[in-house]
Length: 225
Image 1: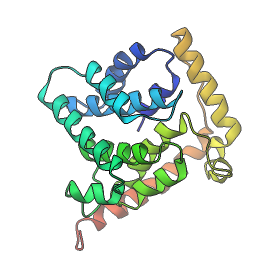
Image 2 (image 1 turned 135 degrees about the vertical axis):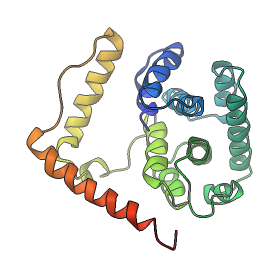
Image 3 (image 1 turned 90 degrees about the horizontal axis):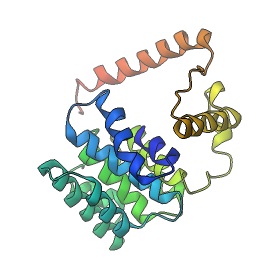
Image 4 (image 1 turned 60 degrees about the horizontal axis):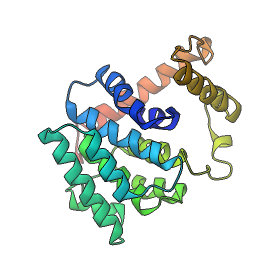
């Protein structure tokens, strides 16, 4: 999910790979996570200047990925997603072809292909693209965030979406401030030390979300799975 931010903020394509490596290796050791994050960042970078072109994207991604079986696997899956989208197939149908009948999982080689399929099919329609991947079910927050991050880099948000954000520190003005600071940090190479948000609100908010996560986690222990 955070890979799109890198693609949206860098000014040159060669900056993407080293930043993705640093970002991904903070939390993931599997190279598949790094390759999938690279695909998201590259798609975002390309969409900043023109609607995402699947052919151009796949060619550029191939040039950035190493010669590794996991990289070849990702390219194969994404090429399949592109061809399926060109034929006019829905993201829901594509997910079913991947065997994801119960929803898109959090596995990188499921989530990213499904998200990019929706982007390939609706490169100029952010709302439809996001809804297309969400109706697949499963890990909808991750898949929706990836689609929104990629297309949001070059497509205006639908009217009123930003105003409906419930986080008080994530209003449109706050988001613009964060975007400016992120761009400045990338341009200067200096980390932004200023913290965002209100500390007094974090504890009750995090406790609330912890309860929600625990309820969902324990719920999955019982049928229907």
